[in-house]
Length: 104
Image 1 (cartoon, rainbow, N blue to C red):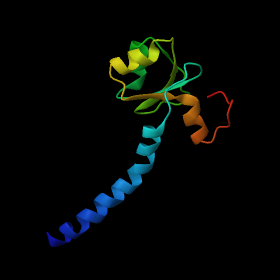
Image 2 (image 1 turned 180 degrees about the vertical axis):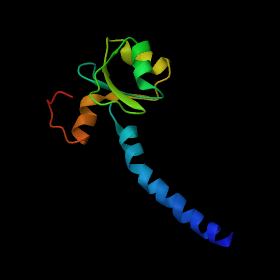
Image 3 (image 1 turned 180 degrees about the horizontal axis):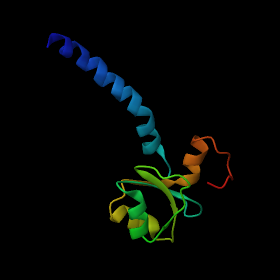
């Protein structure tokens, strides 16, 4: 039991260190501009996009995020029905290594 107590703090600190990068990227993301893809993050994002009246454009499905497009009210609707975060898809694409102007 003593060994578990000694390992608890390093394990928790390691997890915080690993998760701090992705969480800071999400926190610093600019709001969507309206033109181009929008990254929707939430539980079952494809259903959120569909319910908000958008169109999923993600080439590869992901567990908690999807790229979508929609009308002017799409972002507000997605947030209202339960999206955790909605952000500019082009900004995320640049972070992932796609050059500006690349179609995602």
